[in-house]
Image (tube, rainbow, N blue to C red; front, side):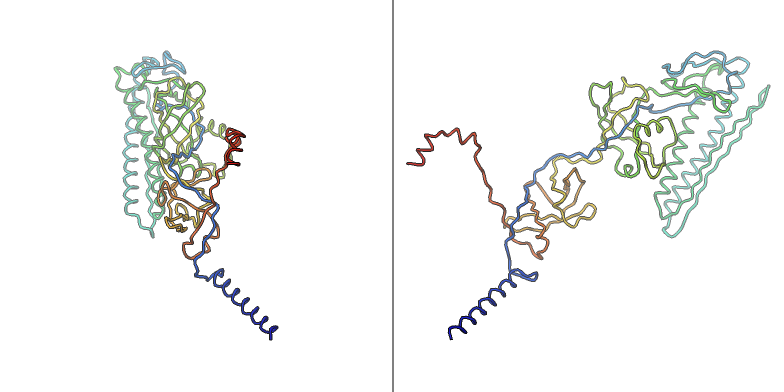
Length: 434
C-alpha cells in the first residue's frame, strides 16, 4: 500500500509541477512575470551634427565674356591675364577702321540675344503651365527653339551673327521631377543670355565704341581665340566656393545648410551657407575636372555631378581663384535633443521605429518614436522620447504581448583603492573590534 501511495503521490506532484510550468512559461501564458533587463540607459539631451566632408574650390561669383570680331580689330591691348580691373576700364583700344564694324557686330548680338531671351521665357511659361495641368495618365511635350540669324550691313562688308539655342523638353507628366529639371535647364540658359546681354549693352553704351571696356569690377581670367573670334573672360571680384554633389548627396544637401570652410592660408575656419544646388548635371569645365582629380572616386553614373555653390559669411581675400578648400557641410543638425542606441530600436521603417521605455510602475512600455537622423551608432529622436526617459534593451521583451514588469541590475559602488588606503589601519582595527 505504501508503495502505490508513493507512486501516486509522485505522479500527482510531477503533474502539478508540469501544469504550473506550462501555465507560467508557455507562449500563451497570461501570468505576469518579471523580466531581468541588463541593458538600460537614462536619456539626456545633447547637440548633434551630421557632417558631409567635401573638397571645394574658390571660384568667382559670376563670370562675364566679351566677344570681339578678331585680332585685327584690336589696336592695343591695355591689360593682360590676371590683371585686376574696374567697371568701365578700357581693356583694349580698337582700330579706327574697324570700330564701326565692331559696333555693328555688338548691335547684331544684342538683337539676337533679346530675341533668344523672349523665346526662352516663353518656353519656361509653357513648361510651368504644362506642369500645372499635368495629369498622371497623360504625357506632355513642350519644345522651345530659337535660331537667330541677324544680318547687319556696313559700308565695307556684311556682319553675320548666328546664335542658336534649342530647348527641347519631352516629359512624362507623372514625373514632376522631369518638369523641374527642364525648367531649371531653361532658366540656366536665361541667366547665361542675360549675362551676355549685359556685356553687349555695356559695350554699346560707351561713347563712339572706340575701346573694349570692362562691364564689371573683376579680374581678367583669360584671353582666348574661339572660332576665329576673340573672347575676354572676366571673373568678378566676389568669390564663392564650388563643390559637386554626387548621386545620393544631392538628396542630403539642402539650400541654407551651414558649412565650415578651412584651407591653407586661412588662420581659422570660417562659416558659410549653401546658396544653390543645381538640378542639372554640371557641364565639363576646369573646375569639374579639378574636382574629379581631388575626389577620384568611381561612380556608376558619370553624369551624376551637380554643382553646389557655397557663400562664405566673410570675404575671401587671401585665397586665389582655384584654391582647394575643405568644406564640412552640416546636412543634419539637432540642438538639445535626446538620442538612443540605434541597435535598441525595433520595427524600424525609414524615420519611424519602436523603443521600450520603463514606466513609472516598472513596466517595459512599447513606445513609437520618430528619428530625426542617425549619428554614428546612435539615433537622434525628434518625437516620442525626452530627457530622463529610461530606455531598456532586451531582445526577448518583444515576445510578450503585454508590457512585462522588469527589474534592473542592482547598482554596485565599490570604493577605489586610494580611498581604502586613506582610512588607515588603526581605523580598520577600531571598527572591527569595537
